[in-house]
Length: 127
Image (cartoon, rainbow, N blue to C red; front, top):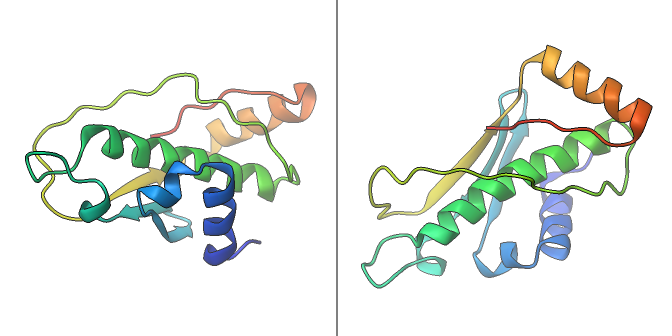
């Protein structure tokens, strides 16, 4: 199992924007994955978090989660493609922020893994 420092290095190498926006990996456990980012790296002209950065951190949390999940099932160099992303901006973000990618239900994971092992490609919806 990779530790948080190793995961951060992988993410920064594979997704260079992650380094520029200052993401740090806070936790990967049974509750999911948490990625944090500082407001200072992602501030806009209104002194709030830039919407593109908010979306990038959210997508990055899901990408990293899937990378780690595939790594746990023996796929060391997965090719991950984000097919769709959706976000709602409910209020301005005025502080450092985080994104949480929660574990899907076990039935969803099992179905994903079954299809992945059979076809070497599969889809999963992460939140």
